[in-house]
Image (cartoon, rainbow, N blue to C red; front, side):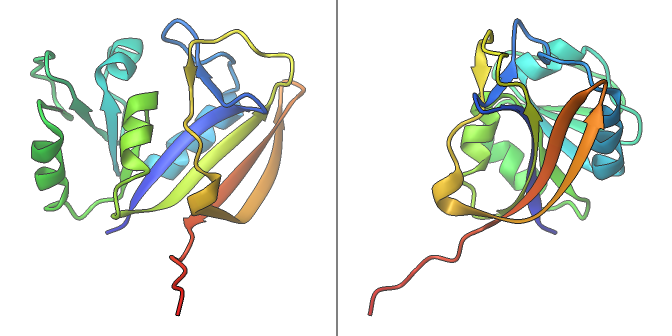
Amino acid sequence: MAWQVIAALSYPHRLIGYKGRLPWHLPLELQLFRHRTWGGILVIGRRTWESLQRSLPGRELWILSRTLTLELPMVRVFSTPEALLAALAEVRKPVFFAGGAEIYRWALCLPQVDTLWLTWVYAPDLTQGDTFFPPFEDQWQAVAWEFFEDRCVPFLQVLYRRREASTNE
């Protein structure tokens, strides 16, 4: 089963968080996220877990953290990337890397990740933040998109696929 990255980020600044929270509240965007990830595994980091502090209905949370210990239904903690990757290799569910910035940076380099679902929230004046999505455009190509609006805020959901490596002959 393919692994995917899913994120909402501001356009044009790539902002994904401020003080452990999303910098906007768009119920429609959250509903689309829930629909897309339902029945899957969300891979997140410790700080993203701390912003949630709860499991999410219909999804498993797999947390990568050297320090966190939890025993909750539908939540697993992995202390090393290697342990997490070994466990993911055995699953037959959709896998979504869902934050934060370090998880995204790491996931974008994994060869198993072949799909990005990015929601670009049009927020040119939103510049205050402390967490940003990493650059990715040189290795990914937009293949489909859909426009939405919620609370007078436009956003674009874009599906990206990994570019084929070019070979020089």
